[in-house]
Image 1 (cartoon, one colour):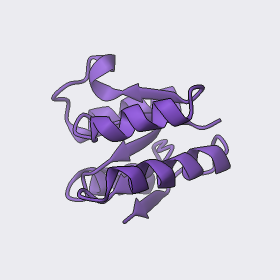
Image 2 (cartoon, rainbow, N blue to C red):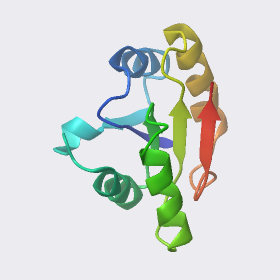
Image 3 (cartoon, rainbow, N blue to C red):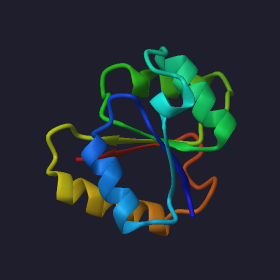
Length: 115
């Protein structure tokens, strides 16, 4: 199953719901990795080293940094940008399907928008 990471501002209710629905899901939170307050490039570097697709609500800066990594040839295992304000249940359902149906490496260099 896909390895995921949630950035620092990602909705904790969604993280908890995903973990309940997919008990075997490998989902790490940025703050648990000691990266609280880290700039986006550092978070993306950590996710790349860990081989984790990054979940975010940050449509403003993180996505631009992800594309910069792709343009410069750096590893970027993928970003899933979930619209803030999307219902928690719907977001959990969409991400559950995404995680279950995706394979490792499938989202390399891509950004998926869930809205």
